[in-house]
Picture: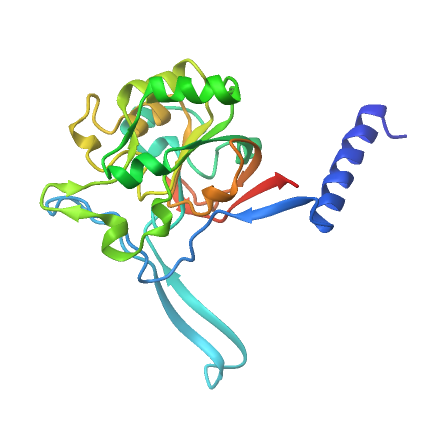
Length: 266
């Protein structure tokens, strides 16, 4: 005999499946296509570098495999649209459940708040989200709930090639959060993670902040997550989207490419 609570849960899941089937709930892909020409983060030359995505054909209905097509692939963990686990940063290296193979599966599905900074980022590639701007967003849309993603919409995903990386002699120039707002989002709002349309969760010049790379510093030190290289954030409402972000289950992995989906009510 099924308990009443289980019946209610089953009914909710059935209603969700039906709503997705009849497009009452839209499924929006927030993922870039993973290909060899997608920009990869570039570290200073004296440091180790992330490998780009590579694909090698094994067979395509030919002598190497007459009835099947498949490929070998290789890539750095932090390539394309990708997930950062807490162990990725030194502040999260000693936490429990800090790798992609151990993080709680329930954390892979969570609601999102989308902060639209696209106008500011178009005017200034070094635009920084501040605590004051986040409070202004809350005045319009309500308090950011705990265990929500905060997604920073900058429309940076619409750029390609060199414009996307935006590298100059002094490093990358891309928008992101400042240190104060990151500490506040993690410690005062209890977010589950931060997602951006740029190559990293931090601004391009965040190595000069205090602490350096504050998104990484505060997120991963608190056991929270990062999503980078997102797309189509302009299709999401400020509140109400549900994010599905399940990284590959790599043993001891610090992150992985993944397909990020958003469920949005019609």
